[in-house]
Length: 94
Image 1: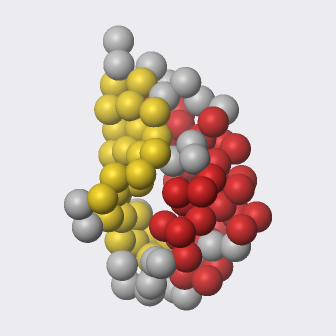
Image 2: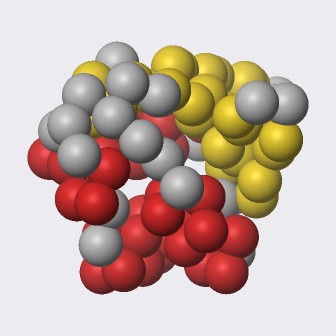
Image 3: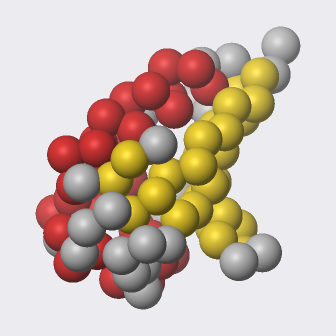
């Protein structure tokens, strides 16, 4: 059975903390799960397993902005927890 989880992530510090290495790590973690992973902001939804999409997404984030992290699939709970852990060291909060 598919499950859907979502969490709003707010950027509380300089978004430049999202380096290419951190974005690459985020994609690797996303790809390790069977679940689909999406990021949504301002009506735009991106597939989080595609590095090219995420580089632009994270580079355009600014302090005070937020986005929605969505996971969909059998391992959605595990996926969202690990992805949030990846974001939290970057000074993002939920």
